[in-house]
Image (cartoon, rainbow, N blue to C red; front, side, top):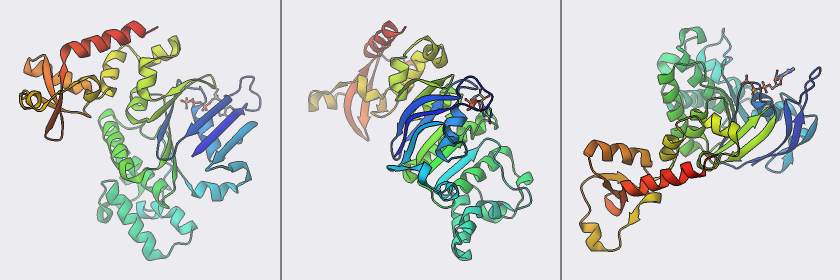
Length: 323
Ligand SMILES: Nc1ncnc2c1ncn2[C@@H]1O[C@H](COP(=O)(O)OP(=O)(O)OP(=O)(O)O)[C@@H](O)[C@H]1O
């Protein structure tokens, strides 16, 4: 677990703190997204966790140990770091770039080669084809994947990701986000992810931290923040389609009427969604099928009925609660 306790930083020559008394816990295996407008202190906060920036005040601990007591290069070897500019070394091949930290750790050559190949495959890149290339020979999306592979090379428990997908086009960006979520299901890294894109934050985050001018404005799950925005600033950040985003974050099972008995279950209609599907998907399917109710299933087993009226009532409740 990463813990920040009343952490502050004011850069020399600046009157305003870049980060102002932030207290924050990032649970093991969670993706915590720092989100907010340009200049709100996201990058500074992130770079304090691997000691690229030193706080003026407060304390940061990793698994209960104060990082101020750790040797920065040793600390950084346990923390993967991915940035927007990727930062691959231009005169080294992709394989050599990914092997940087294993080489520093003096891994045997065979082990490093196996790890590099496994990482490239994990990132959907062909080791035989890409490993020998140089960074300028890759597309933006491929380079970003190599950046992620390099950060994962020594299997660090923590990953810091600073706008890692901001420089690629929207289609590639969605693919990279999906890939990260897929990988995270097995990797279970503790990830701090910086973005100014609220949609990316909601999609990736188990936990969001909304920042404004160095201060934490709100923190919570995407659904907490969507349904109970703290103030107008958060409400504006969430955008006009907040209702749609809520339906995208709400599982069908949470709004369904569970089947009371086997008879009701047997009479379930043919239009189906999975219990863990977002209500937004159920709604789209209902509109497509021109029906006002849809069966909710766990695998093949029908477990309840989701009604148009229940969705409408939910949206009404939420909009009534807004600002
Ligand atoms: N090395 C530095 N020296 C002086 N001021 C700095 C330095 N780094 C950042 N700042 C200032 O600290 C504030 C926070 O910057 P930071 O880069 O953390 O914000 P950010 O939210 O990551 O912004 P962006 O989304 O534009 O990257 C800004 O006002 C910035 O100008």
